[in-house]
Image 1: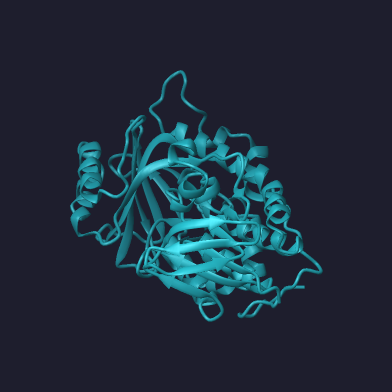
Image 2: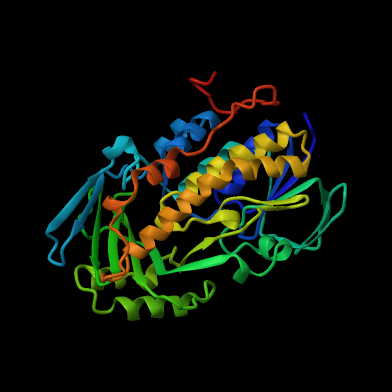
Length: 400
């Protein structure tokens, strides 16, 4: 066992996934999360291609599949509900528009937390307030007043990463808005939704309803074009006013969906954005997931990047004997082209949502299939033979 002390900021998906692999490689892991507890619900996220192999290597395939939304597919519809196009979950071998493995963000977070909670220290309701690096470690001051020293610190705290801003510079240097706003929240399933997502699009806007495991509920999803709009992700009341204004004349089921807006316990709205950085580490501090390389929800691969990145970061650090320079460099080399392909998919999808015109982006069906394949499977997963692995706590059936 290495005994390397690693602090991870963020307990959504990237953080607990990294904790899983760091623990297996022999590190002592602490995860700090500013929220008082795990956040439930959230957007449905997907596992495609190589991401499914990472989940299998984690020994969590059965647990993740048990928590799926079990969405059968998606219908795009006209304003009167007439079905225009259908996509099925088994299209493209389960890697299509609706992935075979689709799970609410909060449900996946819970699976990862339950897997790691007995061997990883979780600190909720706190955050990193200050840190100082030297040649041998990182001194961290927490907002609660506590002080501790770690060998490595990793920011897995999302698009608006406080750790990234603290170590690498202000958000404006790295966050690239794609001209779209995305909102979602849970609503009572009074719409007869039964395992099928229903999506209505008009004039650069969309309104959708997707099923979740609880058949009495559904997830409402809205998007609209808003180039240059500055959204305060902390001002929920202003976000709700903005959504009502932009969707007021949308038609379809939109008025009925918006009627539940004020009662939603899990409302979320933010700009669709990417994080573009030329490096994801600085000495003993590294970044993972959306904090490092958000590809935006429109890529459909944010979760995949987080899970694959966690596997590679832990593996490369352990293979380098926990030397941060070599370990983080290996992680960046292995991840970079995979990230770039997914960010390109995210940009194309965002542009395809804009209103039509001579400069409109191609429809998804017209995208380069080579790019799509690189975005789904375009990364190698070394087996890290010779690197310590304590194994998974759950049954790792089929692993060699």
